[in-house]
Image (tube, rainbow over all chains, first blue to last red; front, side):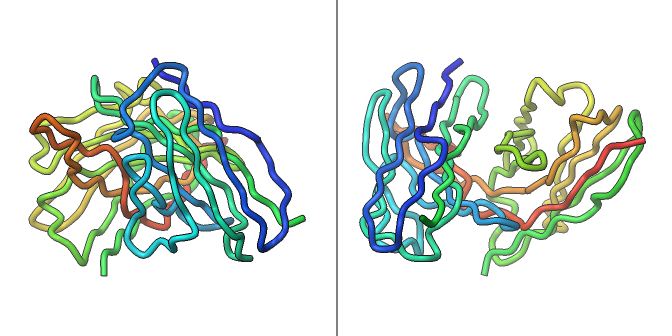
Length: 110
Length: 127
């Protein structure tokens, strides 16, 4: 079973800064199977990135995803106040179909 | 506008049962794979169950297999989760989430991500 490890656990930054979040898989996986979500307190998760690098509908272009194999990243080019949240990566497993999430990275205001 | 609205959560004693519902609108429900995902208080996201558009294929996480049953009613645009033999560790916010088909190459479409989520319904299992 492929495990996703996100780092760091918590990141303290200021608005306007650039940030890169990491998601490492214990085994290589297809980039088609890697997605990122944002969750704010008291809200449901929101899809940001699918297929490792495709932005979901309505997601600002300051969010970008990249990576392949075992190493994937989510980059926010310039933090806005509304971007402070928890970010999860997620992989799809095809046999059987299931969705596995990383433990999350909390992005907090410095 | 796509909307998913969960209901049916509440306080249940260990060993009890409860049925969650998810009402879908704003899209052709009958053509989408649907899922339940849960989140324990202060915890991360855990996938619970998966059902294809026709209900032909269903899967469960090992943690709920044999106790939970997912179903859907395409005529009424509704998704359900019947939960039996509830345990303290089932306490969580339960979200329904839509999974669109995505082309992954070699002629295959798979539901590899969850593009819309409801706001969730809270289940508390406690005596």
